[in-house]
Image 1: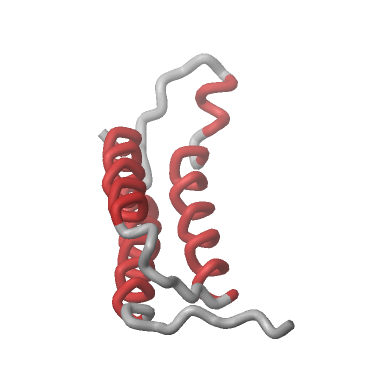
Image 2: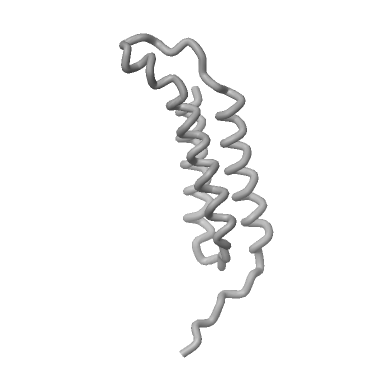
Length: 95
């Protein structure tokens, strides 16, 4: 279920970004850092019981709270960033 949720979120966010590609965006380094941390948290939740796979056993526990935190952090931060940068003028390069 969790991988399907991640895939669905990728499709939804990707679709949004494609349909709003002409909209100016101004992501700060902090925004990128938090989104990367959220991605690492999600991947970490999938890898939490890597040893059982190495032992050819089926994992017994999935850290849902860690996974949900990563998804909520990433999704929430992206939505907040998109709302905050709405109407932000495009920076003009100095020549």
